[in-house]
Amino acid sequence: MYTAQTLRQGLKTRRFGAKIYTFDTIDSTNNCARALAACWAEEGTVIIAERQTAGRGRMGRTWTANPLENLTFSVILRPTVPAEDLNLLPLYVGVAVVDAVRRVTGLDVQCKWPNDLLLNGRKVAGILLEGSLKESSVDFVVIGIGLNVNQREFPPELAGKATSLARETGTEFDREELFREIMRSLETHYRSLARRGFSGVIPLWNERSNFVGQHVSLSQNGSVLTGVVAGLNDHGALLLEQNGTQQAFLAGDVSILGGDTLPHDPQTLALHASGS
Ligand code: BTN
Picture (cartoon, rainbow, N blue to C red):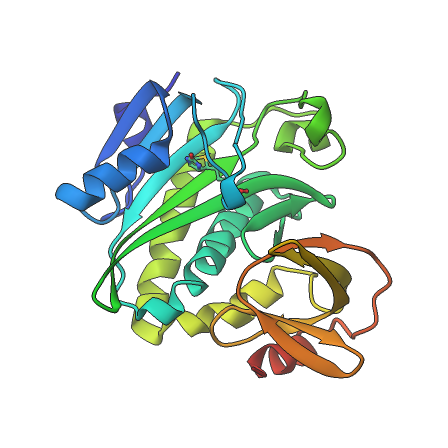
């Protein structure tokens, strides 16, 4: 079991993790982070828990993770971005977490739109972003991150879909080291994107994803579409190509069907991604 003190040891970030609240059991770290952000909590404040009794995923789903084996935490941000750029923030978080996990483990973790991280085609982490607006700009954003680290067994409904770093490698990883590297990576990318503009995350995300060119099905509001991923537009929406026409989607659930039809070279990805 970690403490705020051990998590901060050697952290060397300025804001991310400057305040860490640790809980053994909590309903959801996102709930707690939202409540703190609505009052006074500073940017970079972290809420981390071993057990969540009401851990949330996207689209009203629950997030379950065995205590003492995984990482479940939330970070408060106060970015100066217009509300229409909110969809870029999960991409930034995905890029930062991929870099951190790759650095610590050497594993080829990949980004999957909109908010997942995959390892060997299975979900190894999920990101839940919840924002609060003041007029038309962002007041605060809570980023909730669930990373499956050392859990080997998953409930039957997740078998075949979910995995962990340990399940894929047979090796256990140090959760505190992963946490610290995620904080460093979140801070580095945040600083540079806040300076350059968050749309700068699109090429970074493309470099960390083999998603473009994949044949996928996208479900949204009860309807299912299939097509080929042509990239992301400047607002982080998914561009799906069907019969030579591209449509942009800001939300949805994507399953990869296989059968690539677009090229994968990074130059081409950047071009595709800059379309709208
Ligand atoms: C998803 O894949 O649907 C997103 C999952 C996000 C889970 C994390 S765990 C920490 C934080 N607290 C929550 O209740 N959810 C997020």
